[in-house]
Image (cartoon, helix red, strand yellow):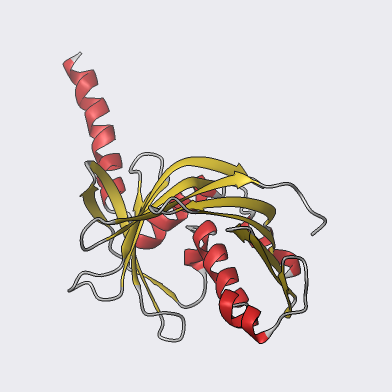
Length: 241
């Protein structure tokens, strides 16, 4: 019995040591294998329903249509009875307010309806719902050294990512379950010495087009844990795109 125990222990120790010595890229690969087991993200096609709630009790309901292979993005959002629709189709931009493409200067200013802002939303949503796969994008710098960190009472394997100057200046940390490699927290700073930025707690999952995405994201300030809001993901009705 003692010899058997020693043999099993000897086999497990190298495995534990290996898990502690994962490089940043190895950890990222394991996380991607969990969230996108069929390598589907590059050709992702799907509709996302997102309901954002803020502490003042207001809600914004959005539908995001993504077809990456066709370079198609559409965001429809409704808040306080007003519906905005922003569409990017192979670089062509269309903006609508309550179903109309006729926009006054006042409409544009009030609702910030511009093609530049539509592009910003496209980048924002494809980044956050494309994680951790988006960390493979050009311009992303993955720290080769991983970390172990306890956050909100749970120990995680942590990946640090920065970006080339033309891509972005924020510093991001991604927290993965050490057993499944599921992404459960991410956090960003503009200047870690302050600290500024936010952290986002992820809970539950919604599988869309074969990809496991975080269902609920709760946002907080790093500096004082002030709660900012929560968005909840659901599958939206399909469209032709």
